[in-house]
Amino acid sequence: MKELTIPNHVAIIMDGNGRWAKKKGLPRTLGHKEGIKALKRTIKDAYALGIKYLTAYVFSTENWKRPKEEVEFLMAILDKLIVKEVNELHLRGVKVKFLGELNDLSDALKKKIIWAEELTNSNTKMQLNLLVNYGSRQEIAGAIKKLINNNEEITESNISNNLYTSGIPDPELIIRTGGENRLSNFLLWQAAYSEIWITPEYWPEFNKQLLMAAIEHFSTIDRRFGGLNA
Image 1 (cartoon, rainbow, N blue to C red):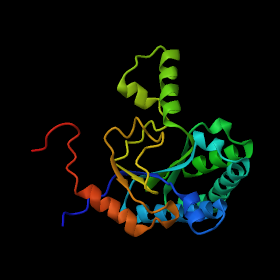
Image 2: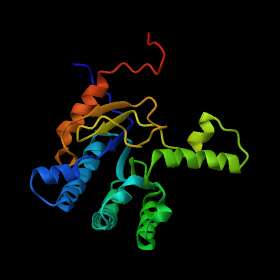
Image 3: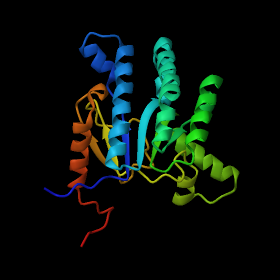
Image 4: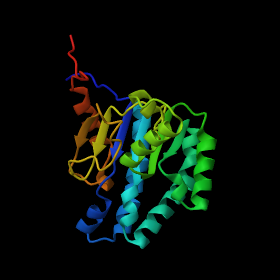
């Protein structure tokens, strides 16, 4: 078997919390709780494998359309995640970044986000990017607006430098759980040459074995970026 190639940057569309709960006859909220457990497992596994950047799609701009009670529950989970996990991540040398339209969040949550980012800013072992109130089309449009307002030339590099992910390498591997074959407004610009691995398992079921399966698949790919390898 070919030697494993560990991607520098893995991005994950964590889909299927609600469907997992429905399949088991449980409330959707329990699906989201199990999804947080899966995220915590995956952060630890990625860290152990030496993955330098891990990006997780936590809450999209479209998720505001969900029932108010579910949105409030998701925001409360995010709040608790910051309070309970950031100190441990900091001790492990993980830098935590929140990417998205953060101004739309509550003042209390924004304060916790600022605290988490400032606390972990100098860490270099791994960078964890949590996409919150994120939409890729909105991100791209915002970058172009900035360039126009600043009278800067609209080039690929200038657009990249004005995205939320400025300074972060593009993901080499995108994992999507839940079996859907789409990107769902996730890192559309950054995913231009990403390899995509999809599993039918729902996000609460995600584990190290599935992460390794994705990496094993990635390791078999001859990445040519439109050219030819010798």
